[in-house]
Length: 379
Picture 1: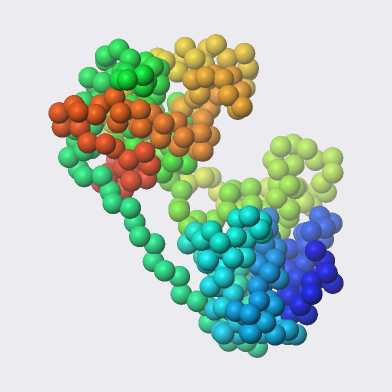
Picture 2: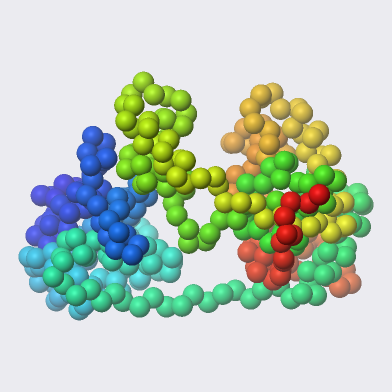
């Protein structure tokens, strides 16, 4: 919708502000209006934030006119949208999932993370759209952390790791893990236990991140509440569109000015290299598990009909939508493979002495591990 297509005057005004902050027209993107960022420093929003701001307008449009919001009265000023009594009513509808874009999804409660995105967007827009309004944001409920795995379960898993990796395929009542699947799963668990990476950090590991003899692994830590992906980080600093960054870094300069190229390269230099690697020692059982997986991985990757990058540590074992066997697992694929493998492992190990079912979410295992990095790269 354009600002004129919204029925509420207040929402039309809000949409007009968003169009300045996050214009849909690519020709206007680089000149988009700055908004107060961290510490009040004016910044331009990323593509991801732009999509979130447009979604916010849609939510306000679906909220205004409902009896829960100002009794259904017409709101003529954008400032009314940020008044506490209106904003609280709108947020209650947002949290309850009543303002979802698709009608069939409405009524399904919005995750706390998505509620936080809504409030972040409100906090970003309010000073620009209604600078005279004293903004008071609704309070988010504290998320409940899922219980972590007991240390005994981790110890039992670790003690049995070498034995599990050494035997033939595990199966029970029709459920089985192939030798290759088990080798990959146990190597993942080994690295998880010894270095506690998040799923994205685990997926980003390459063979080159293993020290000689698989004695240690180097993990590039990512801040959970850190900046946008590096391309958008560079774009924000260079004040260009993320697609311009992609073009410059990819060597496609035919449609980009020399000034844009210089700004992108200057931003890259100012940001410096990616976060430094933290190194973690791999215990003996972990080294055995990782070494066994590397043997399997080499056989799979060598059969690849492609000549692209083969640096990824974790690769697919079967052909899929991503391509043939041997393609590097992306974070989503890695999480699915891990969850599927742990579910099968729990089933085939049921009834074994000392075994307790392990969570299929690696985050619960990760939070149970207390790891200390080495002082630096090994040897």
